[in-house]
Image (cartoon, rainbow, N blue to C red; front, side):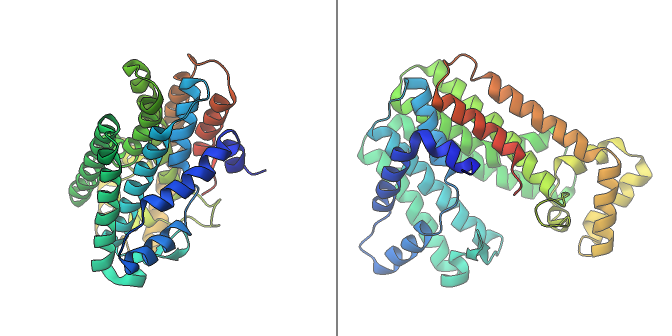
Amino acid sequence: MNITSQIKQPIIAEMELFEKKFHESMTSKVALLNRITYYIVNRKGKQMRPMFVFLTAKMVSGGIVNERTYRGASVIELIHTATLVHDDVVDDSNRRRGFFSINALWKNKIAVLVGDYLLSKGLLLSIDNGDFDLLRIISVAVREMSEGELLQIEKARRLDITEDVYYEIIRKKTATLIAACCALGAKSVIEDDAQVENMRMFGELIGMAFQIKDDLFDYSEEAIGKPTGIDIKEQKMTLPLIHVLNTCTTQEKKWLINSIKNHNKDKKRVKEVIAFVKNNNGLAYAENKMVQFQQEALSLLNNYPDSEFKAALTLMVNYVIERKK
C-alpha cells in the first residue's frame, strides 16, 4: 500500500462521500461550465487538503465528522482549485499534473471566469449554510495567498530577499492554505478556540516544511535524474540560494546576482549556480530548517491521545519532507 493510501485509510469512507459532495458543489446550469468542472474533477491530485480537514476533525473530536466538515473540505478544495486555474493563467502554463491546463484547452478568458466561478461557489456554500466562522478562516487564507504571491513578485524584481521575508512569502503563499485546512477541520467539530489555533499553527508549520521541500527539488537529481534550475530561470529566490547569498563574499554575491538577473536562460551558467549553492552549504541549511518546522509541527500533536487519526497526520507530516516529487 502506498503512503497516500495509508494516510487515507482512517478516513476512506469520508473521502468517498466527500468526492460526491464536492462534485455536486460545482454543478451549474451552463453546459460549458459543467464540461470544464467535470474535466477538473476527473484529473484531481492527491487531495491532501481535504485529507487534512477530515483527519484534523477526527483527531480533535475523537472520531467525529459532520456536515460542516464536508462543507469545509469542499470550500477549501473549490478555492484551492480556483487558485490553481488562475495560477496557470498567470504563469502561462499549459500543463497541470501531466494534463492540459484549463487555459490551454479553453483559453485564458474562460479559465479566469471558471476560477471566479469556483471561488464564488465556495463562498456561497458557506454563506448558504451559515458557516460564517468557517468562511472567515477561508477568506483570511485567500487574502494571504494573494499577498504572498504579490510580495514574491515585488521582491523578485529586486532580488533583495532576506530569510525573514522569504518565510513571510511562503507562510502566506503556501502554508496559509494548509493552516486553514487544519483550523477548519477542528472548527467544524469543536468550539475550543485554543485547539483550533493549535491546529492552525500545526498546518502552517507543515506548509512551511512543504514549500522548503519544493525549493530543494530544484537542486535535486532524485525525481527527474537532473537538477532543473527552474526557480533560478524564473528568478525565484528560494531558501538555499538566499542562505548562500547572505554568507558568500561580496564578489561571489555579485556573480550570483548577475547570473540570476542576466544569465538565467544560459544552461551552463544555471548549472554553475546550482553547483555553487550546493558547495556552499545552501541545501544542507535549507534541509535543516525544513526538519525544524517538521519537528515543531509534530510537537503540537503531543497533547492529543494516540489514535489512528493522529498516526495518519504524523505520517502525513513525515511524507511532506520525504516525498520524491
